[in-house]
Every structure is written in C-alpha cells, then in structure tokens.
Length: 150
Image (cartoon, rainbow, N blue to C red; front, side, top):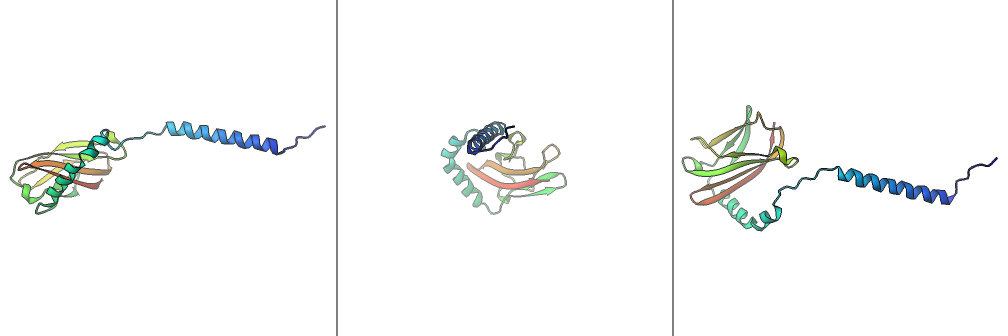
C-alpha cells in the first residue's frame, strides 16, 4: 500500500497554480469595473483653465457670495446682490462625480430677490458639485461648491 507524500515539488506547483488563479480572478474582476471620467473632454478643459481662473476672480470681486441651502423640497441658490435686476445668461450644473448619468443642467432664472429654486423631486439624492457659469455686463463668472441634496 503506497501513501501520498507531499514534498517541495508539489508545494511549488500548488503555489504557482494559486498565483495564476488569483491573477486571472483579478483581471476578470477589473474588467467588470465601470470607470467614469470626470469629463469627456479633459485635456481641452485643462488648456482653457486660465479662463476659469479669471471667471473665479470676477466672482470673488462681487459684493456678496453665492450661497445654497435646502428649502423644503428644493435647492435654493442665493445669488450676489450685484446680479439683481441685471440681464444675465448662464447655467447651473449639478455634477454627480459617482455617476455622470445623474448630472443635471438648468438655465439661470433668478427672481427679483436674487434667488433661484430648483425642485429636487426628480433629482437623485446624494453628493453633487454645483457649478454656476454666467455672463453679466460683458464679464464671465464661475462658482463651484460641493452640496449634498437630501
């Protein structure tokens, strides 16, 4: 009657078999991971970043800051008093870093008090980066701030 003896040759074969199985598992599971870019046109945006710096400086030169808060079932954005009563064009972007399919865009349409409300009924709750871009009196402005919609 012969008995099985485990010696170093079997140990090396077992080690390499487990190593290959682990590598195959890692490659297979990494192909299932969904990777989103922050923006599709990353390099073009990076080249135009000096314009963004100038827009941020223009925003910081206003007499008050943009502020945001949740008010009932709406995101309420309070714009600087410099903007009240003036013609302006711009957009509000709700950027969701974890899923670009949840991003939203709205036109800026402030009331006579400098407020804009965006209903959150159809917006998935969670972390967003709120980005405001607008033009007023021939100058461009930009504001960005993280916000958690509840």
